[in-house]
Length: 205
Image (cartoon, rainbow, N blue to C red):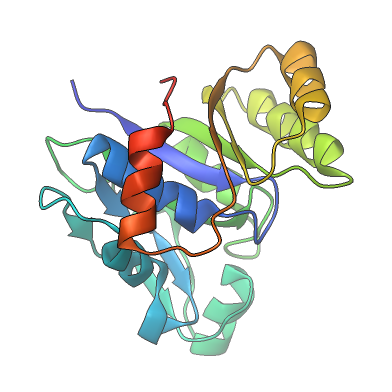
């Protein structure tokens, strides 16, 4: 049975796109980025497409393609667009689907609603991407608490980058959330290195 997972991070620049590419390749899954904010000539969809090797993945079109590289609500305002939650419909597929968010959970998509509201509407399991840095425990625990406050199911955490076992252990102990994978920092990210990563890293889904 196919599954859909929403990939969100504890903040920006956490590595959601790389993790999404890893999961797409590992699961031979489809990919969907609901909101692309800026960088339309090198969008996240294009980045993932350039990283994977399998021929099964289907890339589904973004619901909103915004021209400016800001928070979706601001980019939409600059483009004269109002992002409407009702316009987001999960693409039909018999394949697994990886859905990549924009920024963190509390990023506004319009004047009233946030990325976390989009996740709630789509009603899919969340995979939370964390990264070990000073303050990441706080950011990770806050993200988990926010998801749980809205009764959103968390499939687990992927730690991206250098491991810090002390940090990871306390997050798991305090939350009971399982670790899906530890993805090491790559010196170079391309099709070859991603394929090697997929072969090396176990996925605990």
